[in-house]
Length: 364
Figure 1 (cartoon, rainbow, N blue to C red):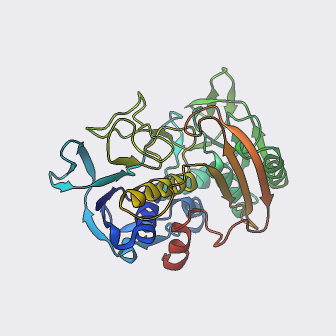
Figure 2: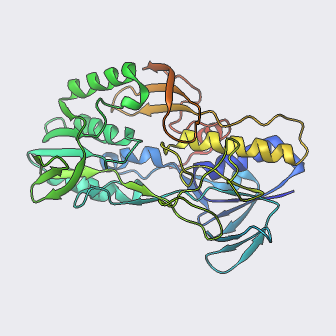
Figure 3: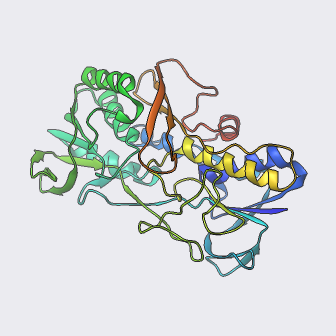
């Protein structure tokens, strides 16, 4: 069986590694990705302060054939894809892991999109004198990096301007539950960072952040996370926001032999660990179809977060469960919060296969 994995992020790398481990010689795995390396994006929050780029790991260690390019179109009837440079590749099974597009969600703010934004964020922080506001778009569900940026700014610039976090959630990192939220609130308080919750940022007007309720908060600089939009793939169905609907085994609904994982999929939370778990569900289903003796497990999300603080990190874990784990509403179940690692290796991206691969192959 020939399996083509399209994408260069967490879901793509986890899919490749899982398929290699689970299916062995039962499948031939190929990767379609524009670059030769995986960028460890979650660590890029350090870059505006350290000047160091986000760590990178070569795809060469996966030992699969790598096609340089990006996915443009899927012809499901022919089991064939077209790449952005006009090439064509056939498949027996396809895993779409092409991610989402980060776009401006708070007009006029300095946008933090990962490694490419380090210089802009560093410049905004350097020029600020009175107050810096860190914020997220109203629709954002994964807010952890905005707290990291604020905490790292407080740690690295103790005599710098006043710092504030403005977020739509009622409590800091509310997604992880009250124990984690209380812990993050204490970290913010000790660092002298003001938290303004239940507030949706709209735009930067002159020297102030305009909230959707009409309030203006003075700021020399506003640093915002992006809003994510889907990247529709010709030949595949997508919702109005451009995301792909999948079932609990990561199959694209309505399209035979095509799977999807990661930020490209429809769902309330976009996060690397969840992307890896979707990739595992897809890999197990494909391995079973290739004749491997296993019972494919459905996607059952467990949220894990490693919060960088400038000192000891904070580890958080939360099981997510509900009648439909792929859409709202979500019911939240057992949680853990600790200053000691809750998983090993203690990487920011947690996946059954990718975590060890990154720990073993990371290079600056």
